[in-house]
Amino acid sequence: MGTFQIEGGHRLKGDIHPQGAKNEALQILCAVLLTPEEVIIENIPDIVDVNKLIGILGNLGVKIQKLGKGKFAFKSDDINLEYLESELFKKEGSSLRGSIMIVGPLLARFGKGYIPRPGGDKIGRRRLDTHFEGFINLGAKFRYNKEERFYGVEAPKGLTGAYMLLDQASVTGTANIVMAAVLAKGTTTIYNAACEPYLQQLCKMLNSMGADIKGVGSNMLIIDGVKKLGGCTHRVLPDMIEIGSWIGLAAMTRSEITIKNVSWENLGLIPNTFRKLGITLEKRGDDIFIPSQEHYEIQGYIDGSTLTVADAPWPGFTPDLLSIVLVVCTQAKGSVLIHQKMFESRLFFVDKLIDMGARIILCDPHRATVMGHDFTSELKATTMVSPDIRAGISLLIAALSAKGTSTIHNIEQIDRGYENIDERLRAIGAKITRLDS
Ligand SMILES: CC(=O)N[C@H]1[C@@H](OP(=O)(O)OP(=O)(O)OC[C@H]2O[C@@H](n3ccc(=O)[nH]c3=O)[C@H](O)[C@@H]2O)O[C@H](CO)[C@@H](O)[C@@H]1O
Ligand SMILES: C=C(OP(=O)(O)O)C(=O)O
Image 1 (cartoon, rainbow, N blue to C red):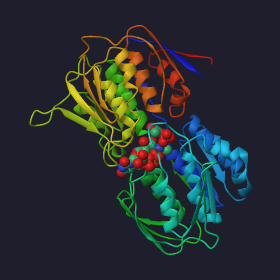
Image 2 (image 1 turned 30 degrees about the vertical axis):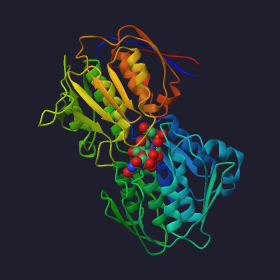
Image 3 (image 1 turned 45 degrees about the horizontal axis):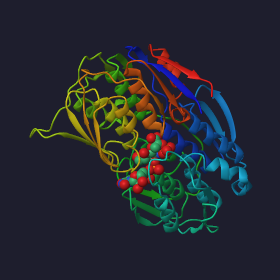
Image 4 (image 1 turned 180 degrees about the vertical axis):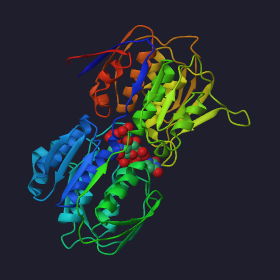
């Protein structure tokens, strides 16, 4: 178990460059399986989850060439489907959430796709029904081995387009179904589709490979199947969750930070949600400039009632930033209700913040009320274990703002989604050390 030691209470200053988006990269990497031609992807983040998926692609027989930092060429012209039946795949496939998205492309191109129950954050129930109901709608046969927790879909005669109304706007579910439908016979309509920038990017990439997807960016995708797809070059957007994390970091440590090249038009409600907490953000070209602020005050609603920050499928506020919003509120002036609607175990980390002196009432597994200190009382350093990726970064932000030296164990969770985080934070003045496990 890796550990960070953090000496808190220092102001940071400087520029920070966001990495490529983790959740987009996971989709885009799976899409390389849809064509035997070369696909070049730029701005791939060097993070644990993405590297695990690249490893799985390699074991599937995809030829992978590193062309530069974050830039890779992939060629899936000789796929080894036997790997899908191996013990190694059971181990590797279950080690991250994103691996589930190899199923759609494999099913579409080779008539079968298998996956062990995928991993990812333990943040509540994470069912896969939407994915498999979608494949069944396209004509696939489904089987599930309960003992081994192993899923399989097969369609030896190919897939046929269909109309479907998803039971939920699942992000990876929509990506999976889209990747299956692009090579199906006829037209597929996916209503209640997720439409995060990750998915918009995936659809743009697939269209540039020769697919015919309409409605990109909306919750209704209409896909006319094509016989084959060709190669392309695709660039992954900056990671909006990392950008939100750095906004939170700047506010909590009262630091002046510029987040470079953020792709403002793809940030949705993120900047305004932080502004509602009283944080000043300036748009400078495509950068976000956050001045050092001694205080920030949570805005109430027009009628004077208390602000609620809740998650919702895009274009609503992403659930992956709620833990960060919560930690930022512990030093705001005023109160807020944080409502995590999607996941039922994502707020339990507040125990640690309470230990550090934050004023939080966990109302139930989905809701927490935070009463900010307005910097009249500092958080105290402590020892903690990172339970999931976003709780991990939130605890790290809390530790950087706290008085004294904190220790965070299980930093593998943070490394899952943040590239070289200790070095990048040291470059803007953070006192953080990685201890060998
Ligand atoms: C690898 C990847 O891309 N992971 C992201 C992806 O996970 P993932 O695709 O696994 O998450 P889903 O979109 O399927 O849904 C996540 C959870 O929210 C619930 N749900 C979902 C949609 C909805 O309209 N109502 C609802 O309650 C689901 O039951 C599920 O428990 O999307 C999540 C939701 O944005 C993000 O937290 C994850 O970071
Ligand atoms: C929940 C997340 O990731 P995953 O779906 O990979 O567990 C996340 O990125 O916040």
